[in-house]
Length: 149
Image 1 (cartoon, rainbow, N blue to C red):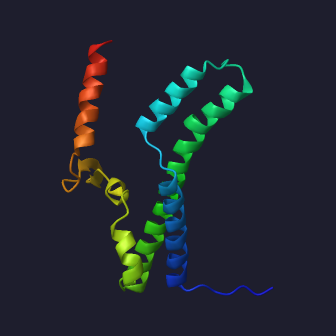
Image 2 (image 1 turned 180 degrees about the vertical axis):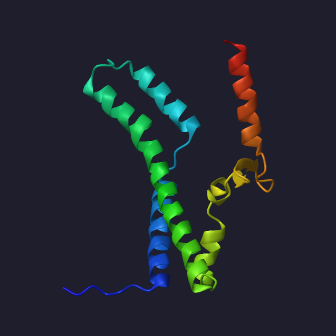
Image 3 (image 1 turned 30 degrees about the vertical axis):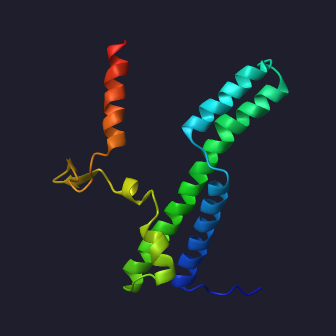
């Protein structure tokens, strides 16, 4: 059985298509923390016995499957980003326009930038990483939680 050798661009295209498949599937059935709260409230209203199979199945869908789907989209995005980066570095050419647009607009690209670098053996904060409003809110929540201890 002979295998067809893939070109570097074909590898990038394959991971690009896979990422788009995951993104579309997730977009068709999105997940958010507000939805989680609403679905948990519905389960509470049902008054199901916590030892029942029905309760367990509903909780698995809410607490395990939906967050895991989001992680799967991120994994596909990261693979696509890594292969695209590898392609541009090794082939010394830009990605095709059809791929470049999606590459530049992947939401997790900013979160992948290292917050720190190593300089003379010590961690140094990368100044081009901004502290987002979400991070600021997280800092406030941490202080509030510590204040209640």
